[in-house]
Length: 311
Ligand code: TXA
Ligand code: MG
Image (cartoon, rainbow, N blue to C red):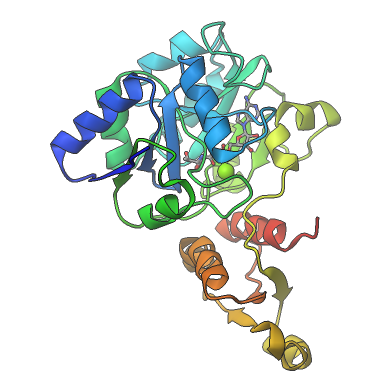
C-alpha cells in the first residue's frame, strides 16, 4: 500500500484525509499528546485494521475521538454532572473520559466491555480532521504495539509506512505523552492513566478521585497491563550522576547513553523521540535521570518506569 504523506497546513489535504477515513481507511494524524492512528469508530472492519496493523492485542480497547459535544449523546448512555464539569473544564484537551457505552459503539472498539473512552483533542489539525470527517474516530497511538508512542510524523513513518493510507504531518506534538484517562463509571472516579492533566487539577474541579484500581477496574482497562513505551535498549533509572559512575564505566561495551532532562515538560517532549534515536544509533543501554514525581512529573515518570520495567 502506498502511504501518502500530507501536510496539515493544506486545506485540501485535510479534506482528502477525512475522505479516506470515512471510506474505511487508516489515517495517522497529530494530536496535542502524541500522533494517533485513526479509523472510523462506527465501521468495525476499519477498526479491525488498526489491531492488525499495530499488532495490538484485541482485549485492549480504543479511545474514540470527537470534535463536537453533540456527538457524545450518540455514544454514551449517561453523562454525570461531574463528567459535564470535566468536559467543560478540560475539553478540548488531553483528558480521556470513560462512560457507559450505547449499542452503536462496536464491540471491537471497547474490547467487548460495556464502556467507551472519549476524548476531544485540542490540536488544530486533529480537530479540523474530525470536523471534516464528521464521524467519531478511534485513535490509538500511531506506533507498533510495544514501541514508544510517536511524537513526530517521521516516527509514524518508521513504524507504519506501507501499511496505512495516509500520514498527516503536523510537525512535533506539543506535549509528548498520552492523555490522562479517568473512569467516570466508578464512585469515586478512578484515574487509570496519569497525563498532562494532573490528579490535583481534576480534584480541584470535581473533588476527590482515586488511583487505586480494584481487580474489576483492571479488567475494565486491560491496556494497563501491557508493557508500553519501551525502546529495544535496556532502560536504567538513576537519581544522581555519582550513583551510576561505576556502572557506566563497566558498561562501555554496550554503548551506554545518558539522558538528563531539566523538567517534566522537557522530558515528556523528548523522551520517546530520544528512545527511538537511541535504538537507531545502536545504544544497548540508556541511563535516564529521574525527575521529581510531582504534578506533571508523576505522569512522565510513570512512562519512564514502564519503559524501565523488566518483563
Ligand atoms: O493521548 C492519547 O490518548 C492518544 C492520542 C492519539 O489521542 N491515544 C492513546 O491511545 O494513547 P492508546 O490506545 O495508546 O491508549 C488507550 C488507553 C489504553 O490504556 C486503554 O486500555 C484505555 O485507554 N482505554 C480505552 N478504552 C477504554 C475503556 N473502554 N475502558 C477502559 N480503558 C480504556
Ligand atoms: Mg499506545
